[in-house]
Length: 182
Image 1 (cartoon, rainbow, N blue to C red):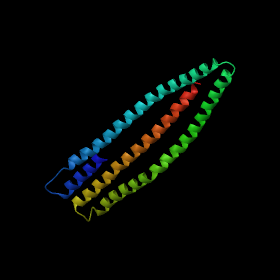
Image 2: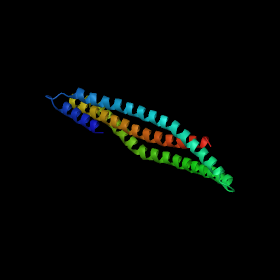
Image 3: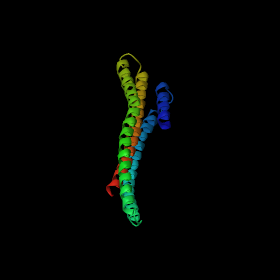
Image 4: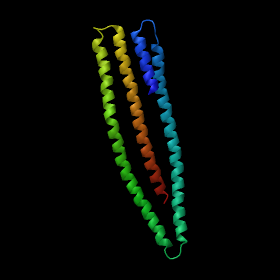
């Protein structure tokens, strides 16, 4: 976000001033934001995938260990092992239902800012298209710059929403894979 604000300020200064021309720096900062977002999401998904595979194996081994250890308890060991299995199955069902509701909540929270940013992006680009025959090139360039800024902010908002949804989905997958080893 700070880099986006700095790039926007540099773009505004470049468009309003005849002496200071730093528009290319502003474009460079905006493109670097896009590259950084792409690298971060790639690293995030890679780490979650690795962690998901390892965690589910460890969870499955833990469940098998608990069931085996409870089998050595005299008289109630077998019943205790089956109750552990039932409790783990119930928690998986509860976790899945809460996870699905959580995904809908995340999508509901993210929809309104995405819609607002989309409307602002379209509005600024439309205003620059309408003003082209009437206004100075600097004002048109400024309106396009602001539309580009809102486009970058829209990309950041999508990025955050996708990371939240992927994170929640990976948490659900990890818990379900652990139950698969029972």
